[in-house]
Length: 253
Ligand SMILES: [Zn+2]
Ligand SMILES: [Zn+2]
Image (cartoon, rainbow, N blue to C red; front, top):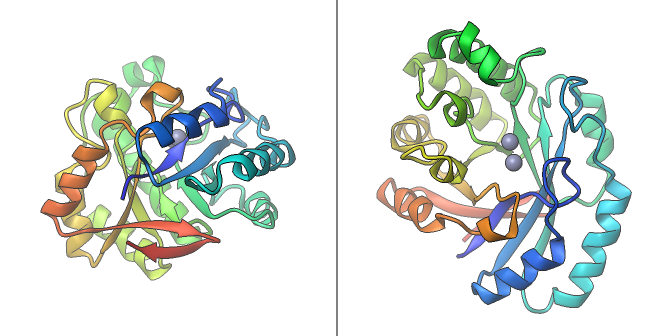
Protein backbone atom coordinates (compact mmCIF):
# COMPACT_ATOMS: atom_id res chain seq x y z
CA UNK A 1 0.00 0.00 0.00
CA UNK A 2 1.29 3.42 -0.88
CA UNK A 3 0.88 5.11 2.48
CA UNK A 4 3.17 7.96 3.54
CA UNK A 5 2.87 8.40 7.29
CA UNK A 6 5.45 11.09 7.94
CA UNK A 7 4.73 14.42 6.26
CA UNK A 8 5.30 18.03 7.34
CA UNK A 9 3.15 20.96 6.27
CA UNK A 10 3.13 24.69 7.01
CA UNK A 11 2.00 23.79 10.54
CA UNK A 12 5.65 22.83 11.10
CA UNK A 13 8.10 25.70 11.55
CA UNK A 14 10.44 24.24 8.92
CA UNK A 15 7.92 23.72 6.12
CA UNK A 16 5.80 25.94 3.95
CA UNK A 17 4.02 23.13 2.19
CA UNK A 18 0.27 23.26 1.79
CA UNK A 19 -1.75 20.26 2.94
CA UNK A 20 -4.10 20.44 -0.03
CA UNK A 21 -1.20 20.42 -2.51
CA UNK A 22 0.12 17.24 -0.91
CA UNK A 23 -3.27 15.63 -1.29
CA UNK A 24 -3.51 16.58 -4.96
CA UNK A 25 -0.02 15.21 -5.55
CA UNK A 26 -0.84 11.99 -3.67
CA UNK A 27 -3.92 11.40 -5.82
CA UNK A 28 -1.77 12.01 -8.88
CA UNK A 29 0.76 9.44 -7.59
CA UNK A 30 -2.09 7.00 -6.87
CA UNK A 31 -1.25 6.83 -3.21
CA UNK A 32 -3.84 5.40 -0.87
CA UNK A 33 -3.10 7.13 2.40
CA UNK A 34 -1.37 10.16 3.90
CA UNK A 35 -0.77 11.16 7.49
CA UNK A 36 0.24 14.75 8.26
CA UNK A 37 2.66 14.63 11.16
CA UNK A 38 3.70 18.18 11.96
CA UNK A 39 6.40 18.92 14.51
CA UNK A 40 5.55 19.49 18.12
CA UNK A 41 8.80 20.74 19.62
CA UNK A 42 8.94 21.92 23.18
CA UNK A 43 12.68 22.29 23.62
CA UNK A 44 13.22 26.06 24.08
CA UNK A 45 16.34 25.86 21.89
CA UNK A 46 14.36 24.57 18.94
CA UNK A 47 13.34 27.30 16.54
CA UNK A 48 9.97 25.62 16.27
CA UNK A 49 9.47 25.92 20.01
CA UNK A 50 5.74 26.17 20.71
CA UNK A 51 5.03 26.82 17.01
CA UNK A 52 2.42 24.13 16.56
CA UNK A 53 -1.24 25.06 16.85
CA UNK A 54 -3.54 22.01 17.05
CA UNK A 55 -6.74 24.02 16.61
CA UNK A 56 -5.57 25.59 13.36
CA UNK A 57 -4.18 22.24 12.22
CA UNK A 58 -7.47 20.42 12.70
CA UNK A 59 -9.42 23.22 11.09
CA UNK A 60 -7.34 22.85 7.94
CA UNK A 61 -7.19 19.06 8.12
CA UNK A 62 -10.96 18.72 8.42
CA UNK A 63 -11.54 21.15 5.55
CA UNK A 64 -9.15 19.23 3.26
CA UNK A 65 -10.60 15.90 4.33
CA UNK A 66 -14.12 17.11 3.55
CA UNK A 67 -13.03 17.79 -0.05
CA UNK A 68 -10.75 14.81 -0.75
CA UNK A 69 -11.69 12.24 1.88
CA UNK A 70 -13.62 10.11 -0.61
CA UNK A 71 -10.59 9.87 -2.93
CA UNK A 72 -7.81 9.13 -0.46
CA UNK A 73 -7.51 8.15 3.19
CA UNK A 74 -6.30 11.16 5.18
CA UNK A 75 -5.02 10.84 8.71
CA UNK A 76 -4.02 13.29 11.38
CA UNK A 77 -0.77 12.91 13.28
CA UNK A 78 2.08 14.67 15.02
CA UNK A 79 5.80 14.16 15.32
CA UNK A 80 6.35 14.85 18.99
CA UNK A 81 9.91 15.63 20.06
CA UNK A 82 11.35 14.01 23.20
CA UNK A 83 8.08 12.54 24.60
CA UNK A 84 9.72 11.54 27.91
CA UNK A 85 10.45 15.20 28.74
CA UNK A 86 7.04 16.65 27.95
CA UNK A 87 4.68 13.86 28.94
CA UNK A 88 2.01 16.15 30.29
CA UNK A 89 1.85 18.18 27.07
CA UNK A 90 1.72 14.98 25.04
CA UNK A 91 -1.16 13.67 27.14
CA UNK A 92 -3.02 16.98 26.65
CA UNK A 93 -2.49 16.90 22.89
CA UNK A 94 -3.68 13.33 22.54
CA UNK A 95 -7.13 14.52 23.55
CA UNK A 96 -7.34 15.78 19.97
CA UNK A 97 -8.48 13.10 17.53
CA UNK A 98 -5.08 12.07 16.18
CA UNK A 99 -4.73 8.86 14.27
CA UNK A 100 -1.01 8.39 14.72
CA UNK A 101 1.77 9.77 16.89
CA UNK A 102 5.45 9.61 16.08
CA UNK A 103 7.87 10.08 18.96
CA UNK A 104 11.27 11.40 17.91
CA UNK A 105 14.50 12.40 19.58
CA UNK A 106 15.94 15.52 17.93
CA UNK A 107 17.60 17.06 20.98
CA UNK A 108 19.80 15.80 23.77
CA UNK A 109 19.46 18.58 26.31
CA UNK A 110 20.53 21.68 24.40
CA UNK A 111 22.41 19.66 21.80
CA UNK A 112 21.27 19.07 18.25
CA UNK A 113 23.70 17.32 15.86
CA UNK A 114 24.54 20.59 14.08
CA UNK A 115 28.02 21.34 12.81
CA UNK A 116 29.21 22.90 16.07
CA UNK A 117 28.18 19.84 18.05
CA UNK A 118 29.73 17.54 15.44
CA UNK A 119 33.05 19.34 15.85
CA UNK A 120 32.86 18.80 19.61
CA UNK A 121 31.60 15.24 19.74
CA UNK A 122 32.72 12.27 17.69
CA UNK A 123 29.96 10.13 16.18
CA UNK A 124 30.60 7.50 18.84
CA UNK A 125 30.34 10.04 21.67
CA UNK A 126 27.20 11.63 20.28
CA UNK A 127 25.43 8.36 19.50
CA UNK A 128 26.23 7.04 22.98
CA UNK A 129 24.32 9.96 24.50
CA UNK A 130 21.64 9.70 21.84
CA UNK A 131 20.82 6.02 22.47
CA UNK A 132 20.40 6.72 26.19
CA UNK A 133 17.89 9.43 25.33
CA UNK A 134 16.05 7.06 22.97
CA UNK A 135 15.95 4.49 25.74
CA UNK A 136 14.41 7.02 28.13
CA UNK A 137 11.75 7.91 25.58
CA UNK A 138 10.72 4.33 24.78
CA UNK A 139 10.54 3.59 28.52
CA UNK A 140 8.17 6.56 28.81
CA UNK A 141 6.05 5.64 25.77
CA UNK A 142 2.84 7.45 24.89
CA UNK A 143 3.35 7.34 21.12
CA UNK A 144 2.82 4.79 18.34
CA UNK A 145 6.06 4.70 16.37
CA UNK A 146 9.59 5.82 17.09
CA UNK A 147 10.69 8.24 14.35
CA UNK A 148 13.95 7.90 12.39
CA UNK A 149 15.62 5.72 15.00
CA UNK A 150 19.17 6.48 13.84
CA UNK A 151 18.56 10.21 13.39
CA UNK A 152 22.19 11.42 13.93
CA UNK A 153 23.06 9.51 10.73
CA UNK A 154 21.42 12.28 8.72
CA UNK A 155 24.04 14.71 10.10
CA UNK A 156 27.07 12.59 10.94
CA UNK A 157 26.72 10.49 7.79
CA UNK A 158 27.61 7.41 9.81
CA UNK A 159 26.20 5.25 12.53
CA UNK A 160 27.50 3.89 15.80
CA UNK A 161 25.65 1.50 18.08
CA UNK A 162 26.03 -1.58 20.18
CA UNK A 163 23.69 -4.47 19.61
CA UNK A 164 23.03 -4.73 23.36
CA UNK A 165 21.80 -1.12 23.58
CA UNK A 166 19.54 -1.56 20.56
CA UNK A 167 18.13 -4.76 22.04
CA UNK A 168 17.35 -2.92 25.25
CA UNK A 169 15.59 -0.14 23.33
CA UNK A 170 13.54 -2.59 21.26
CA UNK A 171 12.60 -4.60 24.36
CA UNK A 172 10.94 -1.57 25.99
CA UNK A 173 9.48 -0.34 22.71
CA UNK A 174 7.80 -3.65 21.93
CA UNK A 175 6.64 -4.15 25.51
CA UNK A 176 4.66 -0.95 25.09
CA UNK A 177 3.26 -2.20 21.78
CA UNK A 178 5.05 0.54 19.88
CA UNK A 179 6.89 0.09 16.59
CA UNK A 180 9.45 1.88 14.40
CA UNK A 181 9.14 3.64 11.09
CA UNK A 182 11.28 3.31 8.00
CA UNK A 183 12.09 6.93 7.20
CA UNK A 184 13.40 7.55 3.70
CA UNK A 185 14.67 11.13 4.14
CA UNK A 186 18.31 10.06 4.62
CA UNK A 187 18.34 8.86 0.99
CA UNK A 188 17.57 12.42 -0.12
CA UNK A 189 20.39 13.75 2.05
CA UNK A 190 23.02 11.68 0.29
CA UNK A 191 23.15 8.76 2.70
CA UNK A 192 22.93 5.36 1.07
CA UNK A 193 20.29 3.78 3.29
CA UNK A 194 17.00 4.52 4.98
CA UNK A 195 16.62 5.30 8.69
CA UNK A 196 16.98 2.66 9.95
CA UNK A 197 18.86 0.59 7.41
CA UNK A 198 18.99 -3.16 7.07
CA UNK A 199 21.29 -3.91 10.04
CA UNK A 200 19.10 -2.19 12.61
CA UNK A 201 15.95 -3.64 11.09
CA UNK A 202 17.47 -7.11 11.47
CA UNK A 203 18.07 -6.46 15.17
CA UNK A 204 14.50 -5.15 15.48
CA UNK A 205 13.22 -8.32 13.91
CA UNK A 206 15.39 -10.55 16.10
CA UNK A 207 13.93 -8.78 19.13
CA UNK A 208 10.43 -9.66 17.98
CA UNK A 209 9.59 -6.56 15.94
CA UNK A 210 7.08 -7.40 13.21
CA UNK A 211 5.62 -4.11 12.04
CA UNK A 212 6.84 -0.89 10.45
CA UNK A 213 5.30 2.24 9.05
CA UNK A 214 6.83 4.01 6.07
CA UNK A 215 7.40 7.75 5.91
CA UNK A 216 9.15 10.14 3.55
CA UNK A 217 9.51 12.92 6.16
CA UNK A 218 8.66 15.28 3.30
CA UNK A 219 8.82 18.99 4.08
CA UNK A 220 8.01 19.89 0.46
CA UNK A 221 5.35 18.52 -1.86
CA UNK A 222 7.98 17.27 -4.32
CA UNK A 223 9.29 14.83 -1.69
CA UNK A 224 5.95 13.21 -0.96
CA UNK A 225 6.25 9.43 -1.18
CA UNK A 226 9.95 9.68 -2.04
CA UNK A 227 11.86 6.38 -2.09
CA UNK A 228 8.97 4.38 -0.74
CA UNK A 229 10.01 1.58 -3.09
CA UNK A 230 13.33 1.30 -1.26
CA UNK A 231 11.52 1.04 2.07
CA UNK A 232 9.08 -1.50 0.68
CA UNK A 233 11.77 -3.76 -0.73
CA UNK A 234 13.67 -3.64 2.57
CA UNK A 235 10.50 -4.53 4.39
CA UNK A 236 9.86 -7.45 2.06
CA UNK A 237 13.46 -8.70 2.28
CA UNK A 238 13.16 -8.89 6.03
CA UNK A 239 9.55 -10.12 6.05
CA UNK A 240 8.43 -7.13 8.07
CA UNK A 241 4.82 -6.08 7.76
CA UNK A 242 3.79 -2.57 6.74
CA UNK A 243 1.09 -1.11 8.96
CA UNK A 244 -0.89 2.12 9.17
CA UNK A 245 -2.73 3.74 12.07
CA UNK A 246 -6.24 5.03 12.45
CA UNK A 247 -7.60 6.40 15.73
CA UNK A 248 -4.31 5.31 17.31
CA UNK A 249 -5.05 1.71 16.35
CA UNK A 250 -2.67 -0.31 14.26
CA UNK A 251 -4.05 -1.70 11.02
CA UNK A 252 -2.11 -4.54 9.48
CA UNK A 253 -2.17 -4.29 5.71
ZN1 LIG B 1 12.19 14.27 12.96
ZN1 LIG C 1 9.74 14.68 10.55
